[in-house]
Image (cartoon, rainbow, N blue to C red; front, side, top):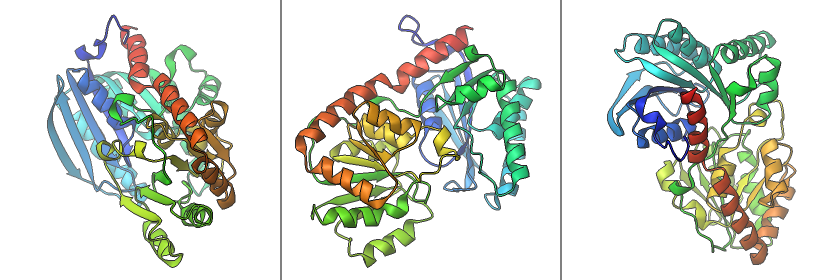
Length: 386
């Protein structure tokens, strides 16, 4: 939306579909459309079989800016392949049998995009937007299934009316698929800076990790990183916000290494809670595993952008397009994926108050340029007017 037309979404109806793990742009879109008083917004979150934090399909409606109903549907979450099949049928018939029709369906993976395209053909919506995380070329164990996954991506992208993506490099793939660049939009995994506390003057020896506790996010390195930092900064603390498959093993490792006073597990927090405390740290870390043919490499880092919005210097694994942003803009440090590299960078930032203050100032300024409200305003203005 432009400044002269701030409520272009208010006369439209929207359906948001996602396999849901934790707080992400599904929630941000719902809040954006609700705050701008769209006629109807239906958000359907399906449990993500690989990370089934949801146990049921959750459906939430808002009408003219007010949340009216939330309901849940029992579904299958394991085994994964059957969960995806059962959930797909449940989703299709839930929307098909609903009295509601939608102007726009925004979907966040290729399977849901395919379902949305099918719903469009029978008149349940007018526009399908495929909001892609990226492409994970090694997602499945079997080559044939990965090929089918790639084919589904092509079908979903070419048959959707518009393609949004988190990572700029996805435009290269969409061009190879002969998709009109005018229907493609970069919408990074960022937030509204008005929704997070932003302090300009903070300096302490507190570090934070936000995210799913798994190998892909480098959570297995956390205890050893802090153990190494503690040799130089004895009062170092790390707060871990999140849950996942490594939660129990990490707690055991922390106890074994005698780090109970240095590492705290805060568990899974809602955005409204962690958004008010992140700015109180001096460093945010994102030790992504250095594998570059996975979804992470073709996606965007929400934790990085949330850290920046809170004003935190970011220490992140080098080699990703989003980690290049950190180095190129002086927002922290991109380092090798190992304990020593992360430890050295953390010590550097925590032993130098002036450096920390300078990076924090740049982070607060930089994040304003990527405020998601401005990005959605611009995109919806073009799409809905077209």
